[in-house]
Length: 266
Image 1 (spheres, rainbow, N blue to C red):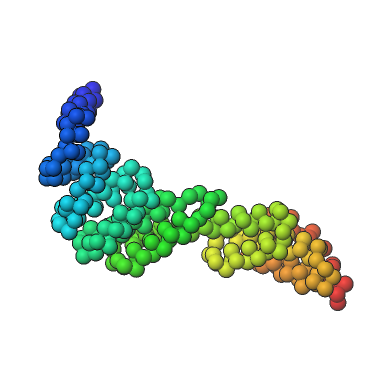
Image 2 (cartoon, helix red, strand yellow):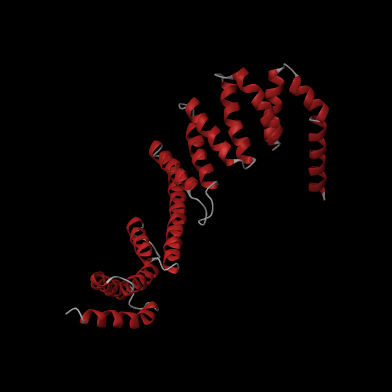
């Protein structure tokens, strides 16, 4: 109950201190020092929208000064806390470009990349921001290789690569289900090449076995042999790498058919 009362008192105090009339008067004021102090206070009170309005008014007046550095830093965080990550990343990067030798430059370069990470969409959507996030996180790791944040940056990169891998896998499966077997095979092969340590290798080999067999069945006569051979080889790879795989039971009949088809070429 006491905590609730204190919270209400704080809210009332904030409303009183920055009532609409007083705040508008401050906006129109030429007292930049008062605006600066109020902006910092509003930021600390998590009133980021009004703090940002004041910071915007002060940028030109304090450019190139210590307070200008503060304004640039807090402006980026205002957008960050307001969850406008696209604009926040821009201001974090601009801070680094404007104040590369300041202690906060490392933090801001990381936050720039982290905003891209937060803006990365789910795997089913366009992944342009995901690629940008990986690029910016790698830039941070390369720029500050001894930073304590490098381990976290590398973990974020792994998370983003997992998302890209999932998207690539889903696209490959989609090609197979659309019966575009050539596209499915090419897509699965690229997936294995780009993500050699994938945890989806068993599923990939399963779908590739199916795709190669169906591709061979629907091929012109002169192409059938090499494609049946590819189907058998992929089945053997699955058998070797995953001898306990449940998919082997499903594929056994197709493998037997492929081998029988190949006998006719001997």
